[in-house]
Length: 435
Image 1 (cartoon, one colour):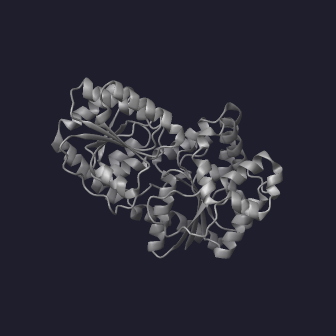
Image 2 (cartoon, one colour):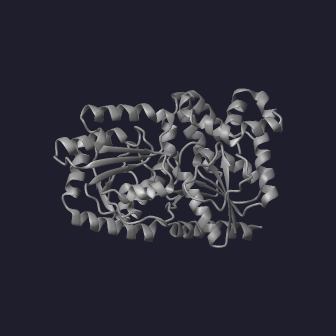
Image 3 (tube, helix red, strand yellow):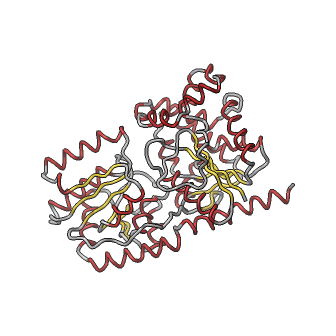
């Protein structure tokens, strides 16, 4: 079976959806299937080798091209040499680093147009995609990495009689952040376009039910496809001289970085854990720098600069080494998290996790046993949860071991691949019977 993944890239930092698609494609290839990754909008930033990404593959619906075509219709007929120039990976990556400078209105307009996706307006971009796929072999299944791409489902099925799978991965928080004039229209349009797909996959039971309600879909329409990670290279925790709290996610307000720092200050100053360290790692864009600098100043004013380590934009090997040096792990997200790949990575390194008692976290932690969920309405609550765990080293060790075993059982690439194949094989068989 051949599966093609159309995956939006970030161009400047690692993203969970990109890493998930790459891990799944690699696992499919290693099992004897054909799989390819086609980057969309921006180049893919991957933390491990990709067997499914062709080095000659262009970036489809290149971000600069799409922006210009939306603003100025003349660019919908621009010559091929100009498109190639605007789609150069280096240029796209440079622009991606400045994406925080794009207005909210522009984000709203582009999101709406890609969900609406009029075949006439985007004929040039669709033609490039169709040509590449025809030259490299039509897939048995085409997988859209996020529901924000669902506008493509209808157009692809006009071109080929193949099943289209549409995955969900945190679209609600993005749509809710759009300006009023686009927010409701994009929600309505995404609900319509998702119905064009043959299969809808959500990364957790929690998120599937949430999006069914938000989109007006029948309960159970979105099937659960848990994310998985490649466990190679994840080691057990090191023996530490001092305890260390860890965070591995984008360094932004939405992920709860400010709450994390305030909780650490409370742990050190009020609760008396004076030798504890805080280690922060993850993607940091130019738009995240002001927050990080303000938190560094707050720590400096309290004399805690040397108690906190900052490691932005680390590689896979650096990430694995980082996780093995932690006592406890937390990403106190401020929105409804669809899954939380970072939680699985921490548990793979045998690090106990402390997460908010909401979103997908109770589901992940209950199935793995690799942590605890607590209310995090204040920094004091989070600090108290850390303090309780750090006071019981035996419990930390037990939870860490359970978490590693739970990830091996439920959240490996092998488990993800098997679940995905089961889901899509029935689509292909059903399509064959109807022909």
